[in-house]
Length: 545
Image 1 (cartoon, rainbow, N blue to C red):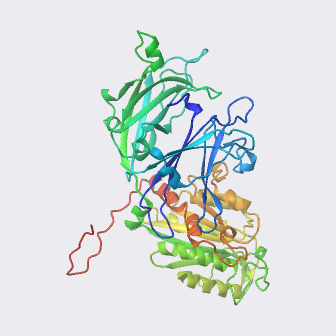
Image 2 (image 1 turned 180 degrees about the horizontal axis):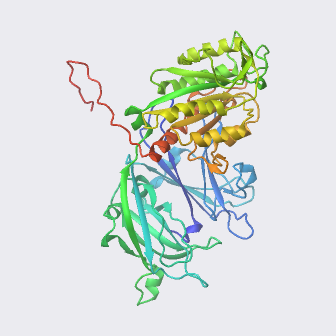
Image 3 (image 1 turned 30 degrees about the horizontal axis):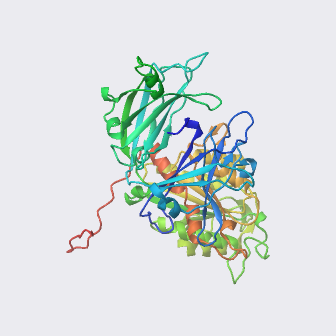
């Protein structure tokens, strides 16, 4: 590896996803590794804290959209992080570069190096992008290490050791794949056990070299190199034994000192491996997805008889709610086997006595609130608009708790509940909603919030919990279960057409598989084996080759 560990910045981004719109899994999965050299220094007393943001350009719209981002403290890269804000304008811009995936893959050894630009008159350093096709290995390894008698690097105390793991690439270079935590003030650290996909460690090649470097952590980022050793997945898989005690060697010391033995030893304490189950494994194994739809009938949406209302009943075209419901509903209905959806409304006065309800059936049938498919929901929605009076306040908690009651009754992994809330984003019971989300995070459920209209959706972004996990009364949500999507981002300028159903589908369902898996894993629930393919009587089953 070139230079000090912190002169080089690396991030790994896997460009592959299950496509919820087509149900396809791409034929090839590619992992892109990003590293930078000689970035501008924007911090006065230390190195920059760089952040790399990857944008992808839409095929239809040609708009740039954020794909992913990652931060490595005290190294050099495309934005310098100056606050915890997700708003990039709050950080120092360090440079940019444009390329296609084809350029990266087509470069020698699939390694593309280009200068960073974007700041006139400044040399911004360079960015290196490497691509490697990923194997289909789905195993995840869990391992724990300790070390003994590491070199003392600190003048006033012992060392503060941490380890960095690297996967070797096909061209002989190394890619960082894991970094342990720092154990303070000890020459005999015991690091916490960690999980790592076998694909990340060796890309399914059990004999590929794995390099491990040991460092002494320093506050200013100039971490001291203690030594290194190499191993392989096949070696590690032997588990705790004399084969998995490694001498930590500092090559410079070894060359200088004749009596040099080592800079300490690292021992593998435990090793286990299990296969990672996917969202599709559970669906194939019979887990049912149950969708419930909830529509915001509060007065902030505007009077349905006026054209400015989000609920405007225009005989010639769909209003914002109907468009969102149809577009999103058509995506999610494919995952619900019986296509019967409970459809609820909230925030309206109901006939005959004008009482306010925060969970009423759109079809008017409390005993059976189910509608047949998206068309059935749309029909019930239009009927409701004619009979109820938009009112308030906008309370989400009753609807969330409604679905949570059903989810609480089936926690064996056979069913998973998804609540779709369509709203104008004004919310009155934020505290109660947060509490409902924290409680719901323990259950087999997820919430998709689709925001319609032009309001500020700050409260919805907060509930999404991507940047800061939702909490209530000092309790953090066990997992992230909310996905927020502003519908206007997917509309054309007239507001009458969805620009890209595929992009809307992807973003609406983007987090559901991971949220689903996080619940199943937290409860130790494995998928049932998929039933054999159906063969009609009198037919033998032919395997297609």
